[in-house]
Image 1 (cartoon, rainbow over the protein chains, first blue to last red):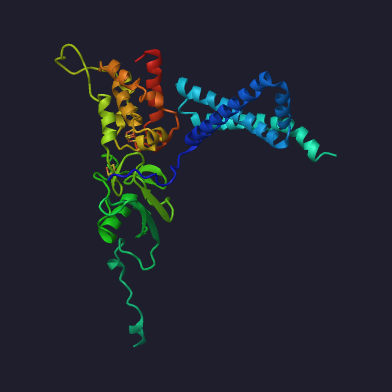
Image 2 (tube, each protein chain N blue to C red; image 1 turned 90 degrees about the horizontal axis):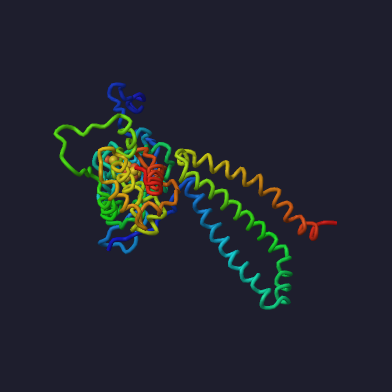
Length: 129
Length: 256
Ligand code: SF4
Ligand code: FES
C-alpha cells in the first residue's frame, strides 16, 4: 500500500515560520475573545460573581498572560499588514523577508515599553520595597 | 635490501586523479527507505559514501545504488536540472539531487521523498495527483476563431509578462513544499498555478476566463497562505509566490 509518511520537519524559512506564528497567535486571540465574551456576559447573570472572577484576574500569572496576549495581537496585526502588502503591492513578494525583519523590529520597539508598564504593578507588589 | 622494504613510490604519471586516496573523507547518506513488498513503515538507512567536493548529491546516490545497495530506488534522467525527475527532500528542504553539491550539506545528509504525495518505493512518489492538478488548468494555448495563416505575433514586452513562469520543469518541488498542500491534497498547488499563469498572461491565449474559473475554486489560488516555501524550493528560480499573487490580483480586479 502506498504510504504518506510525515518524515522530518520541513526546514522552511522566514515565510513559513511567520505563517506558523500567525496561525498560533490567531488561535490564541480567538480563545481569548471566547473567554472574554463569557466573562463579560457574566455581569448580566450575577454582578457579584463577575466581580469575583475579575478579582481572580489580578494575579501575576494572568498579568503575564496579558502581556502574551498583547504580544500576540501586536504580532498578528503587524504580520497582517505584511501579508496585505505581499498580496496587493506588486513588489511585496520580493520584499517579504525585509518586511518581516522590519515588522519584528517594530514589534520589539513597541513590546518592550508595553511589557514594562503592564508588569510594573506586579513587580512592585512582589519585589518592590 | 632495506630500500626494497620501502613502499614503492608511485610515479607521477601513473597516479589516477579520480582514484580513492587511502584516508579519504567519508560522508553518510541517511536515506528514508520504504519497500511496499516488505515494510509496513518507512525507515532510515545509512550509507557511507566517499566525499568529493565536486560531486552532486545525485552522484552520491548513484554511488550507493551502484556499489552498496542496488535496491535503492529513485528517479533521475537528465542529471542536468532540466527533466525535473529527481526532486527530493534533502536536509529537510526540497531540491533537485542533480543540482546540489554534496559540499556544504554536512557530514550526514538526510534524504527523504517529497512530502504530501503517496510514496511508491524509497524516494519515488506517485505524481498522479500533481499532474491531475496540472491538467486541470489546461496548460496549452487556447484560441478561438480562425487559425492565423502565419505566426501569432507578440511584442517583446508581451512576452516578458509571463517569461518567469515559462521556466517550469514540473518537478513538484514547490507543490510538495507547501504546508497547505500537505494538509489538503486537493489544493491545486503552486505548480499548477504557475503553469496557468504562463497562459493567462500570454497575449496570444484566449482561455484566461476558463482557467480563472478553475483557479477561483475553493481549492484554487485562495488556499495560498504565502509561506514562500515554494519560491525558496523552486530549482528554476521562479518567483512562484509572486505568480500566485498576480493570479489572485487578476481575479480580484479582472485584469489579465
Ligand atoms: S515552479 Fe519550480 S518548483 Fe514548481 S514544478 Fe515548476 S520548476 Fe518545479
Ligand atoms: S535528473 Fe533531470 S532534473 Fe535532475
